[in-house]
Image (tube, rainbow, N blue to C red):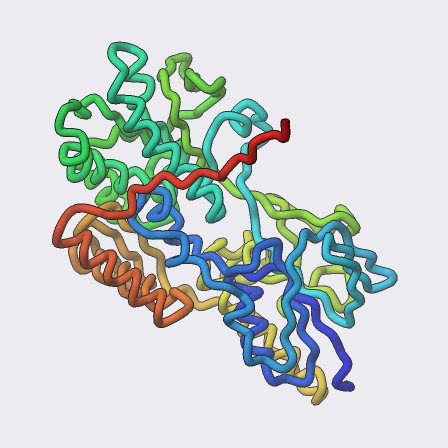
Length: 421
């Protein structure tokens, strides 16, 4: 191998960033391409949406991460296509040749073909989407001041579609806003009619977690005033009315979609590399099946193993581990040594519902309540990229804990330029 070998990494999420960091000071030339100039910490996106954290707390500039690197370069642009035979990646920032290509572009919101839902519901998969939702939530409270009757109720109905960690955590945060913040911010308005729905097609919320955690999470939500609807399908939403599978409906101006994800697909790959959920089928070395010198890691990859015959869960810990193992294998390629197969060792899963309310499943046991909540906070603090961001987040959390309040409820909208006369 010569020093001119180039690895292009598409996507600076948990997997792509980890790989690039681990290949710093290696003999490879690394080109990291992302449509944003920052890495975003998705597990805390809901806290940006509910005005608990500023976007800068969960987003970290890529050029800051690699400002002292001699072999990692950054390009900001949209990936348009790949020419496999020419080993070339086409992007809005130009075309780039590669020796090895690593796809780590992650996933986007999956509306399952429901165009009306896509048009009217609010997603929350990126920092701009979280900011858009934050503005909408705060606007709703302002609108409610001057409304009454059925119109008011439609404004005050928040419908969250999907009972996974994102839906549960968002519902809990909204419930705490209703209890702790709105009475102080709007002493002249009764927000008791604000209703938060979590609608889930499965029999439970947090359906992939343990029975104890499922039960505890639902009990926490109900205790906080959230209406939980299991075994319920959302059929349609036209911007004003949510139509459910049993024919009933909910009048709502605010519907938040957290029901599924699908892979960000790139033109130029043959159809057979993709499987369910738009994920790329890979072997035990994260090599894309049927293609030479192309790899996929993180949420976009699908690997069948004896322990995970239907693929690994799409969570940060899997993405980070895949990035680590692939970096080791790239370093081993130059020495013709035996490569390391990827094997994921489950570290557990967790979700928080509210203050002192969380659930944690470890491989051998699970626990809920205050200890689970402290565990959740510690783990997420450790995963945040920089010491500065960890400190800012901790200070915000500590302040909110003691005051039951937040100072971040600012609506920031894009400025519009006046047309020339």
